[in-house]
Image 1 (spheres, rainbow, N blue to C red):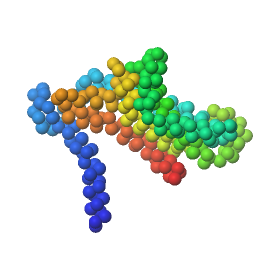
Image 2 (image 1 turned 180 degrees about the horizontal axis):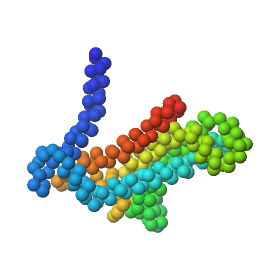
Image 3 (image 1 turned 90 degrees about the vertical axis):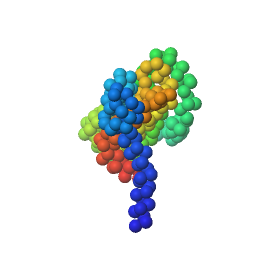
Image 4 (image 1 turned 45 degrees about the horizontal axis):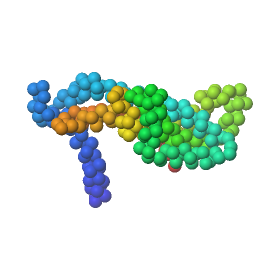
Length: 259
């Protein structure tokens, strides 16, 4: 009994901010357009979707996050396969090096990356954010996929080549289906890390191309419409929930195999 009560109190403590955010997102916290304060309805969501700036922020976030995930998986797969199947000088040190790069604080590299991207014309563009996120997400994707490829017997490679499959055919017909849970786990982490990252998103979007994280920060001011902020916050959580829903089976299998 005490255990159940403790779990309920813990769940309430954890979920209370989320419940409060959802309730506030349906509540008018500032009187406007004839809507009284405290009115319950969809006026905040209508305000968010009716704002060209906020709609553009949602679109920018979707573009750079999906591009980041696609690039990370496309580059990490062959890199992880090379690390798992071949031996070369410094292979283990190389994996350690890229993981150390991942734990480097983003703010340390913010200035050189901004200067480089400004010269390449990638500032104020979702493409620039996607590329810089790949620098930090790619080591994680390689590390995850390399561990999963190691669980695939080498006999699968040899059998596929004896059957006449080329390298590309082996990748798509045999290797990718065999490590689908690992790809799901890698895609999940790349998506989450990119979606919630704010340092480079703020630095690389000075005048345009702002994502959701920056747009939410810009909504705070002298007289903040908390209802609008919470509506934008709730909308920002939907892609993450959708991502978990679509790859939930792969994530469950992936974590089980990883364990």
